[in-house]
Length: 222
Ligand code: DX5
Ligand code: ZN
Image (cartoon, rainbow, N blue to C red; front, side):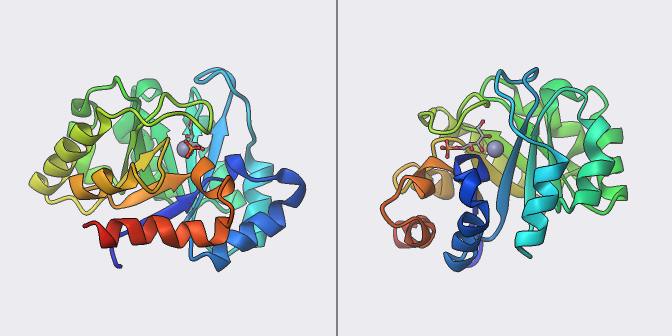
């Protein structure tokens, strides 16, 4: 089952029971904890920042995969890494100095990622592939959990996989939005290897088991 990384999103967690939900992720075999930071500007919704990253850091030793849906993301790099972020993924749509921004994230000791909205061309990251530890293909328009997977994402994943392989990049290829036991399979087949799941895990009858079911769906239907 190597090569499949499942990253449940705490956006769908019950914040009154955050410690229990993070423990559930660990017990379920999650590879990363996905942390959705939203600023009410890049996306309409507003979530949380360094304080919550620091809280989750104390609850688990799993890598914290922080997805910055914020304008001027560089304002937060230092605080978030100091709070315990393992990786920072910034949106190309609001990062005009991607090369410098990715270099800064790595300099701080974190994994550098770029996210692309469903309507953003893959070419937006072509020039920075050597600087990239993770490419995140959004399969919904970011802002909310529980949205429906956009089917055109599959072709984008396949093309992103080709682009990374052609460049000899070892970057993770992550997909985020509407991932469930059905949608994860074509994403995996198209070459994605990291999967964010919010609603699918937290609305499952057995959230802990659902993490394993998502992973198994890739392997069984490979
Ligand atoms: C969407 C966020 C996602 C979200 C995924 O804007 O970036 O990470 O939590 O939630 P689901 O899996 O419910 O679509
Ligand atoms: Zn996300």
